[in-house]
Structures are given as structure tokens and as C-alpha cells.
Length: 341
Ligand code: PEP
Ligand code: MN
Image 1 (cartoon, rainbow, N blue to C red):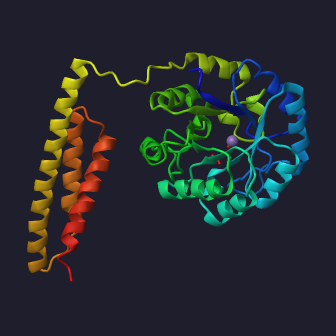
Image 2 (image 1 turned 45 degrees about the vertical axis):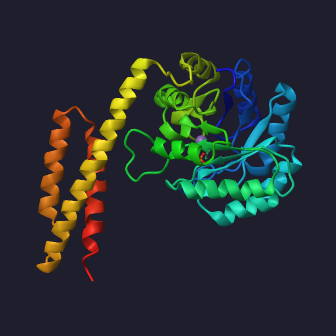
Image 3 (image 1 turned 135 degrees about the vertical axis):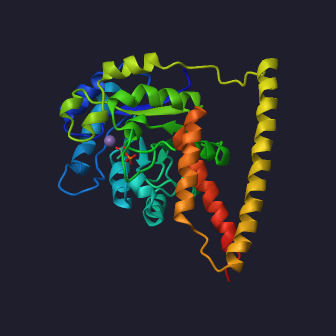
């Protein structure tokens, strides 16, 4: 789609030759910023942590040779100072930095009065307030419009994705800050080339404003994030496979009728939940009178197992149903706990 904002480039700036080779593959992609990590936040020490300030002149070469605007990650006031001196065009604050309000404040203070685009990634933990808080800190300092990047959230057990998308947080973000363009980062979310198209498609269907994609001229030999990077031609192929659908709400009679049904079902679901919680309340009273504990492991496991089986029969997602049951159980415990002095 023509007004989609793209950020593309390698995970790390490895050498001038690597940046040039990658940049030369991107000429046909209408991206706005060529990205490259100069300071790399690594989970464990011992791996490549970026060339630091040494790589900044390489990015100046890219600006001159290709006419691209360049963006890097900044994680301290010192990074900001060096990057501003080098004429870097835009910054992003990485997911690890966004978890720390001191770091974000330090970066924000160093951006006072500076007119530069800043992209703020979601924190590694699923905390919408922390993400929005980081945006508020930076927007108080700069007068340039900000952007947010949704890159998913860390989980202990990596299942399908490197970072859990938790799309609902991104949608909640859009409700809280409809004025801030939201960009999707399917590279760090999926952690795998194979997932880029699927995740980009979901992001576009959820009305994201742009895509942030890692590109390397030789992904298999990339020094960082090798599994998730693609070549320029591969990226072009992915972008051409995304279906940009009409974003206007389709208000046909058929959809409006179906929505009426949904609305009445939602209302019934709530009535049933209220009835269920009322019964949990009565049980809480009895437990309290008889001095028994609220939590009963055997009962909870049986209930969960029975309903997950039922969900399967009904063709519902067992993951969704088990999460829903946990929420319901948690609320019942909260209600029953009110009887305990
Ligand atoms: C990056 O974009 O290179 C990066 C380190 O991402 P994140 O902060 O999302 O992990
Ligand atoms: Mn990366």
C-alpha cells in the first residue's frame, strides 16, 4: 500500500562492504529509513556487540552513495550525542532500553529541543503502560512526531515465535494513542525468515502503518539475527505477496445482521459469567464457614481438563479456552478471598 512506511536494513552494521552490498539490493524498495544496529544490546556477553562509533561514518557513506536516510538504535545519552554529531537521520529505542524508565529519561533529556524522528519499540515485557510511558517521556523532549514499533514480547518458552505477538496489546496501544503511527517488526517477532510474510500480512490486516524488516545481502553469514534476515530480492518478493486489503468497515446488511447476533451473544456470555461468579461467591461463603481453603487443586484440574476436551469437540482453540478458564478461575478466587479475614 502506498502510504505504508517501511524501515529496512541489516540487524548490525558489520562493515562498510556489508552495508553497501545490502543497501544496493534495496533500491527498488520504497523504504523510508535504512536501519543498521551500531550498538547491539545482546542478551549474553561474548557475542558481537556492534562496532559502535566506528560504524557511524559507514552510514554517512550510505547516505551519500544511495541518498537513503539512516536510522540506528540509541541506548544512552552518549549514543545520542555521537549519532547527532554524525548526522544520523532517525533513532530507535530498543525493547530492552524501553523497560527501564531511567534509560528512557536519559535518552529523552539528551534529545531536548532536537528535531529528529524517534521510533519507540515495545518493552520486552507485555506492559502497555511502560511502552506509552516511554513515548510520553520522549515526546516531552522532542518536537518531532514519534512512531511506535510493535516487536512482540519475551516469553520463557519460545513456541512458534521468538517474541509473542500479543496482538491485543498493539490494538490497545492504537486505542490509547491513535495519533502515533504503529509499525510492525515481524523480523524480531517471528525470529525466522519463514514467518515474515505471515506476520506482515496480519499486521497489515490489523491496520498497522508500516513494517520494519531486517535485510542482509548474505543472511546465512550475518553476525547477528541470521535466521530472521532476508536478502533485498527476497524482501521484494515478500512485499509483493502481501495483500493490502480495503480498510474501510464493510457495512453491508448481511454484516450488520451478523453483528447484531454477535452483540446479543456477547451480552449472554456476560450474563452467564455474572451468574457463575455469583455461585462462586456462595461457595466462598460456605468455604469460609467451614474453614476450608479456597484453592482445591483436584477440582481445578478436573474442571480445566473437562472444559478443554469440550472446547476441542466444539472446534474452539484449546489455547484460548484454557486462558479463558484461568481468568475465570482467578476471578473466582479473588471473590472467594474476600471472605477470608
Ligand atoms: C533491533 O532492532 O536490532 C533490536 C535489537 O530489536 P529489539 O530491541 O526489538 O530487540
Ligand atoms: Mn536484530
